Length: 389
Image (tube, rainbow, N blue to C red):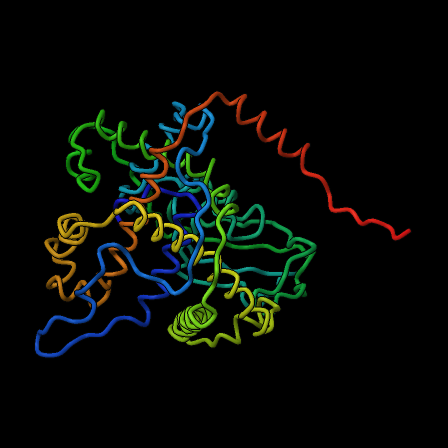
């Protein structure tokens, strides 16, 4: 969801994985231009079979330092917006700099002999990514397009074979890479101006630099509040899982992984072999992920119903219409065939609930939070056993 692009807390990210899991199986495209099931939604959010007994979610205390953003945090948020709108420019002359993506031809030799996997042509390498062994990328900084350079390097002692995960036969050996720089692409970050904001930040409903900073500041504060209290809410909430619902979601998520690897000509087992994981361990990992995500979203949907929160049709259309109007999709129905209305509504409602809870927080001095935490730690007694007399 556009509205949530700047909300980075784990509690928000988890609901997206759940929505994606649902979307993979809920899409039903109708024929003859008729509306599909995906065009309908409960605007108060999905009713899950899994239920929760809510802990305290009103009047949660947050330290005053988590109720404001620092200048450094705001500057970083602004820079993230600028960088997300950066454009790549191709350079066929000039010198490579850190951060550029260089298109290179290279050949690696050990004791003067080329080795398998050490040669490539037209390879795009992000300089500074750490993708290649130490010294390779740094050795290209300052080198010009058309230049050929020999890099005298050494494979790490723990260098592993990328396909098997085992220590490579090249580990610890000296190697010479002969590299030719064909060209490079450099990311051009725009300047922060009112004109930039008006053109590229419409999604945040801002038109000036001042308005953008105000919006980002609010998002940062929301993030900090969520980080301060969300785990407390999770810990104080009791959940009763519907095991059939959990099993269905686990299966759907597993199918997503299967489809993903099939798209790359691989099988799920290939990934499991590489990760050194059994299918049973993988299933257990998915089960844990689903349960964590489910608890987050069911809490939010329950709070929404308790407090009478819901997404309006206007809010929904404000979210999806820009994609349709931009020509990304031929129609609203085409959009909903890929992104079911219920999933979009749930995501918007989830965000609204988080905002609603954060707005109800009580801002107190940090010392009060610290004192409460210390008292909690010192008054918690370990379980003891009584010896029979």
